[in-house]
Length: 245
Image (tube, rainbow, N blue to C red; front, top):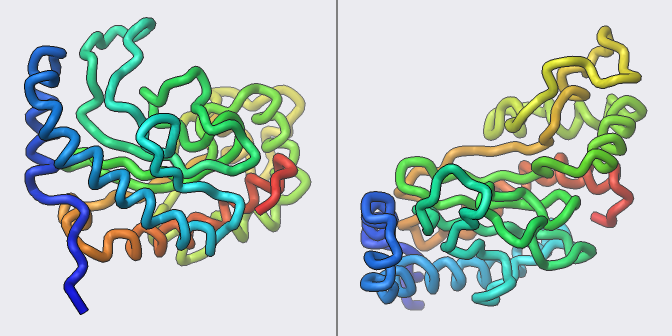
């Protein structure tokens, strides 16, 4: 049996580092072929190979390898309202979204790396030299969605703790990531045992990935192992939002 081929190489990270140092349209145009060969095409191949094992975790989640409108975020940044006007992202990322949601990110772009499509939780993968990670959850949900999650948390504290406090989950992800409100939201008891979770604005978990992991042929296996550990959080959030899991 032939040996499996790694998806990425040191040249993949070398391109991303070079892009960070030369983030201009002129440089990218001159090196677009390198981006296609070293980053985009390998990433799309990885996404395609993740679809079947991801569906083994939940048949409702999609790893879509389409070059446009699929799981992979575009390299171009939306700079319309950003202080940083550099035109390209010096990283690659993908969102594996719930099939019940539209296959477009909220606002039509993924500059901030959304964890899901619209307001459904999802799985995420981020590749950046020295700062790669994976995880899942829901990032910056709309106010009504956030209200539903908080109410579900108050009514289901035991299942929340089971999903996020297990030894296996804590070992990989530790505490949840993202922003929290500075004050207790209106209508909630400041003395509630889960008040710090109620105050969250994001419900996401994340774990770092070393650059070396992307150079291994069994990268999909590692990603799926981590997604299995994130699965209880995604399952719980789907329950909060009446989505199948």
